[in-house]
Image (cartoon, rainbow, N blue to C red; front, side):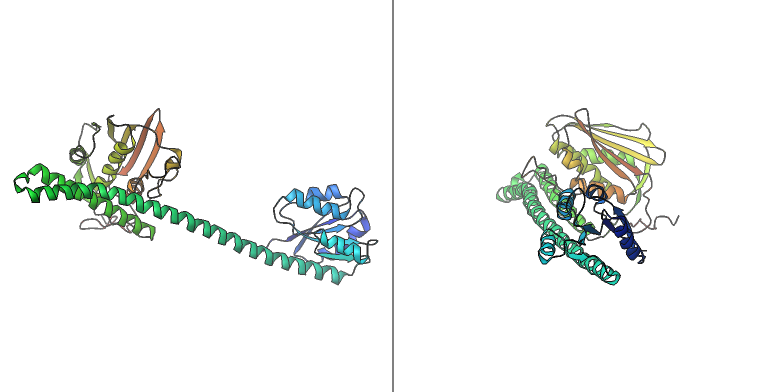
Amino acid sequence: MKAKRRIVIIDDMDANRYVLRKIIEGESRYDVLEAGCGADGLALIDETVDLVIVDINLPDMSGFELVQAMRDKLAGERMPAVINISATFVSGKDKATGLNQGAQAYLTHPINPDEVLATISLLLKANNRMERIEQQRNVAIARSETLRTEKIMLERFMRSLNHDLRSPLSSATMVANLMRRNPSRRTDDLIKVLEENLQRIEQMISNVLDISHMSLGGGLKLRGESLSLRALLDQALDNLRYQVGNPLRLEAEPADRQVFWDKQSFLRIFDNLVINAAKHGAPGEPIDIRQWGDGDTVGIQVSNVGQLPDEVLQNLATPYFISTRSDTKGWGLGLPIVKALSESFGGSVNFANHEGRVLVDVRLPINMNNDGTGIELAGRTLGSH
């Protein structure tokens, strides 16, 4: 049901207010308030008032002064429609003064009920149109600002992605050229460096594709399999020790735990967290990884010396978010991917600063759980067992 339109009558004559109230309340769509002086009337005025009928000759101020006081009080908020009304100020000059001061209409006593209602209806319709125009204008401004922000983010995204891709691409190219010029130097170590850099490039491209897919409303496809969690962590750490210079320390449950997860997706979560800790944490300081079990949930915490800027904590889902502390240092796709994959598992991730360290807590169910959409499990669908 549509809310009633609020109308305020400000007149020092009780009889005038009574007549106006009776006329207006004959229309069920109006809610009427009244005051006998300018100060009391001004106290009733707020952004919920749609129309004000103001007597020009008030005991404490003129109706013209009251309209200006209303404008000052609302200070940029939506002004109600204003009707000046008078029994003595009836000349063309008086009417012109009222209209110039902000009134939209001018009535004189004795009043005609049909004229009063028609004037009110006309002004409220005009105000509705103005409100719609203002809303459309605000929407257009908001869209323009959004497009401007997205353009800046896209430019930063492309600049940061270009920078991140160039490093492994240059390394891979250098190794390939070295082995081509001198085949005798084609050692297992050089081939391993080449493979690792190509894997980094593939990882970045996969992240970009996943972020793009999610931004279009698509889910991430996961395939579950039975895995030994401790073996999975050991494998991940063995690979990461080639990629980061920080010591990696693992504290895990004494007993092995079987999980039903998408192996590659978990490795992406884990790798992104550790690499991000090495990239943005204190150089050379140990990165601590702690794993524990809590019923049907596995907890994994990655901790490093450092501090996540508050802006980053608030923009974890923004790819290549760049803090105002820097025009060039983007936070990449790692954190958005970690968040998206953890939630696709049916889990969660929490980032926090604590006593000079960055703590990232990931909670994942032992068996990936979801409503069954967007997840593929090897040989079966989740929830069918």
